Length: 152
Length: 251
Image 1 (cartoon, one colour):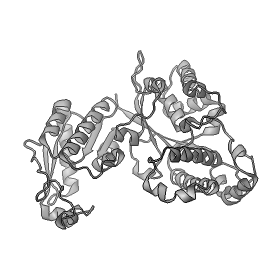
Image 2 (image 1 turned 30 degrees about the vertical axis):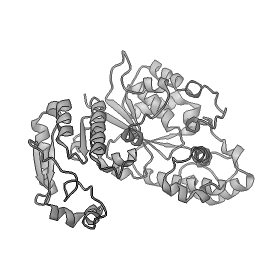
Image 3 (image 1 turned 90 degrees about the horizontal axis):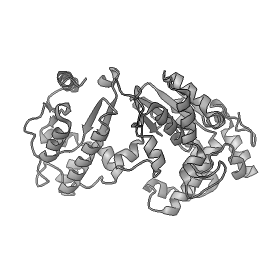
Image 4 (image 1 turned 90 degrees about the vertical axis):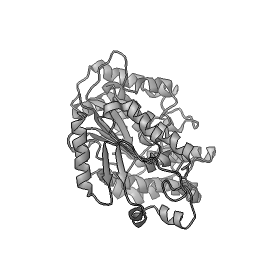
């Protein structure tokens, strides 16, 4: 909203919407996630000349796809690592995934118990501790980074 | 140069693709159908259309507008992409007929309908309840969009005077292209060019561009259906400029 209020065209890629459109809501296998992430990178690349910014919020647990995005978009790429204690995630759980994982109904919740491992980002531009920081503050820091990178 | 978006909102079955393609050509902008885009699908199988609606026309400069994005969502408050919105509306009786034929085509192909559609298939398979269902949704859609800031286009007017309507839209967008580009757009995306048929000729295998005419409901509705539809929908229809109260009457 902040960027759009400044007259910029901003496209958003929400992981759930992408998965729904592709009919892969339940495919959280390593291969499925990688394929989905590479596809989103390709789509963002195809929109590069058409919009000012693309905000991609989706599960990208593997460093290889993040490195690919960094390679493709260079200085325009801003990686935001959303960090949160698992206790807080269990408390939120809007989709009921943690409840299912705890009950043993699913075993593929990324970063949780025996689920697929999450590659912790090595050099994200921004780290947001979402269980400690207010949304407004995090948004402010991200916008500031966008300005600093000169992509606004 | 900034990248701006034109949002084209309609209920569906109202000429959105046709209008959007013409605008893409004139503005040298890319057409984006969000759901197909996210799914990694193309919005058309036509090489002719694709070649002219990607925002990369040879020898043509870009305008301020880089994308024409379509929506069928009745949630204008959530769509904050742009302040340039075109609301496209069509006689709900024609929309209902077109939607019914599309439903039959999709049902025939099988497997492509969402679960909810399957569950209510027994209702939708009945022609009149199908028409009424479309009408309920049509009213909900336009009630949501009506109070917003937008430029209104009627499909029936677009059929009669596409150049004139396009000129009005372009003035709203504050774009002043060569008049020849407007004429070229109308020709390149004429019904005959896109479908290989004359207007009014039907191809049930192509539900996206079925007949390209206004008033087909009069050939499809029975007299009883027209009367019942008018009784039910007359008041709502008048709110949006359509006289649905009497058979065969348009605004």
